[in-house]
Image 1 (tube, rainbow, N blue to C red):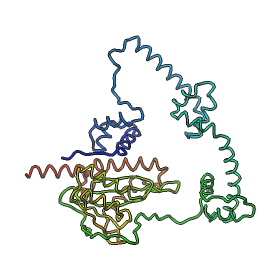
Image 2 (cartoon, one colour):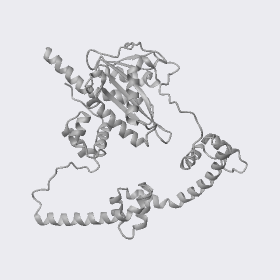
Image 3 (cartoon, helix red, strand yellow):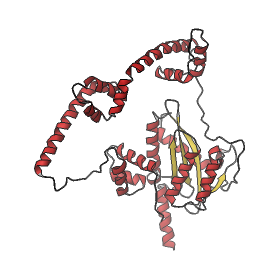
Image 4 (cartoon, rainbow, N blue to C red):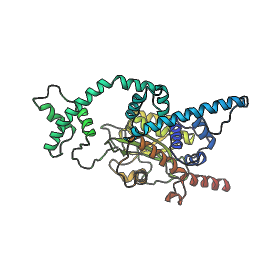
Length: 397
């Protein structure tokens, strides 16, 4: 069986999943990811926040006196860290934001060294000094934003909340009293800080953007989303992941029609061609080779782009495309997208932030192959389904 390869991004996401899964064992996370425990441990050593695997022991050459000295030093550091965090507690009551940590360091820098404070609070010392140096500029900007906010609020109220950032910007710039034109991005930022949102209908995000002139590949699947063996027919799609601040993240997938296994995926805040290329390259890393396989998608510009066509040719993949505007022709991928959003978002309409979105979607995708029972697979996980199929073929031969 070909050796699987993983991108550095996948390794870092795997380590982040382990470090943010409270109570989960190394073996459990490794099983969820479908990798060896030792492999995950090595990734944690290289990419983990502590850069150190559990289970290390002191060198035999260290004397008992040296061990005692080290222990006393560690105790003293822990006590100092405890005292610092106790004093910081009242600051963190406002929320654990980076600026609050900077403010705390600035207030107690005469009691503790700045270097030690930054270590305990896990912030970059140079970032603190930059924050302190730019304080006057920041204060002037806050004053200017407050004055602009008052004008925005007046216009927003007058228009009964029907104006968004661009219309309010036009209103401000048409005011004879405005000497310097205002940028709509700044207006949007100030409105966001004031929690002012113009009335709008439910947004509809289009992820399939056809090009005016594009090559059309024949439909080699024709809605028959099945295969006699793994690594023969794949489907793929891009779906948007809504964020609370109004932005979107995007997930692209490569799904094996034989087992419904998610062989490749990529998450980003853009819909450029590199996103679908990354997913296909991950699939190649998982399977070892995609030569002769069919990849079915819609007519999105990223799939018809020359760059993606070149990637497919390089990997030996044959492209297949559905009819324009017919979602049923790629229903397998659409069904996967719906299941992901339903199970990850549940009663929520958006993700809290892009970081939370990435972490939760990666967690779900990692468990999808190894833990989530799929009706197509007889209610076993896709990885288990493939393993059972391989065992049957071996016994038959």
